[in-house]
Amino acid sequence: MLKNLTRVISSLSLILFSSGVLFSQTDERIIEFYGAEKVAELESTSPQFMNYLNYYVEHGYEVLDNVPDYKLEALPSVSELSSELATIDPEALRINFNILKYASPRLEEKAAIYRIENTNSVLVLTSKKQLMLFFKETQK
Image: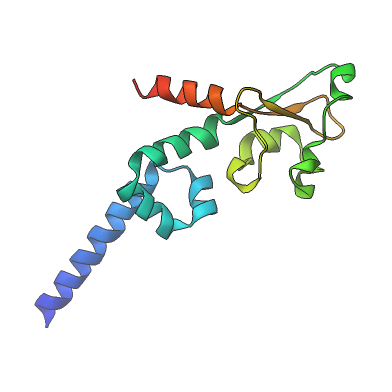
């Protein structure tokens, strides 16, 4: 009985340890979006896709400051992505933005740019082509 209990505890420890190792390489925003179970599945079945997702959540956007007013006027509001972004601070967006949560109408060749309300900042969603070129460079 004690021997079986020791095996169960050892097995659970191994599973928990390997899960921790697995997720240590995965951006928390991916786990937040897909859930831990799906991420574990993707890590084992599609490691290249997981590499891309990690790159995407980190480099798929940027926040630019000090954009002249005349340029901001022509841009759509970031609230068009989601009403919850209407009052977000640019610094909070830099730190906490989860690009996976928003249907981003990025174009193949052109970045999508949104003004951040009541600031001189914009959210830039990198074009699909540019993002893929940058990602491929990191894989060499």
